[in-house]
Image 1: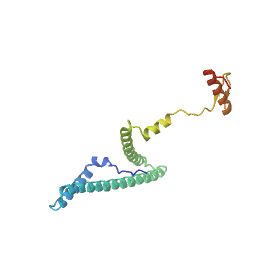
Image 2: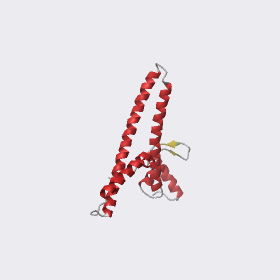
Image 3: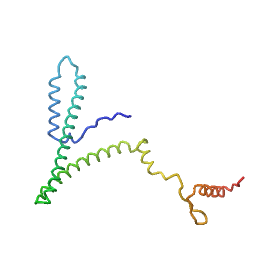
Image 4: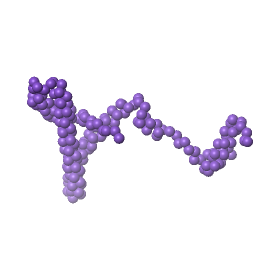
Length: 177
């Protein structure tokens, strides 16, 4: 089994607050670790791990917040739907549904971007992706029904084999021995 590599959640870089947190973390890292006894190369290599750790922390924090918000919205929609049958809470119900739709749309767009990137990377290469796509496009190799010369059709494998034998022997003018 291949080892999965962690991928960067690119939506983290578009959020200004999270970008400021990453910048602040890296600034404090370099301020604490720039000493004469540690080489610049070691500091630079270690900063990659610090940056990756901070990004993982922020991504998991955002994922927890999003899933919590989604479950809260689903619960709110369920309660509003039951209340809507009794009293007028239609506007609140629509607003909650709209927020849930926005969250689901963001998730869908992220998955779409990721799959587009995957197909872009593997489009012109022969490999598992191409084999999987071509496997679905192959015609079935087995003949289940055959129309005879007389116009009748058959489904029996022995009769289908005889028809193929007759056709190819007449095609190549071979005689049965």
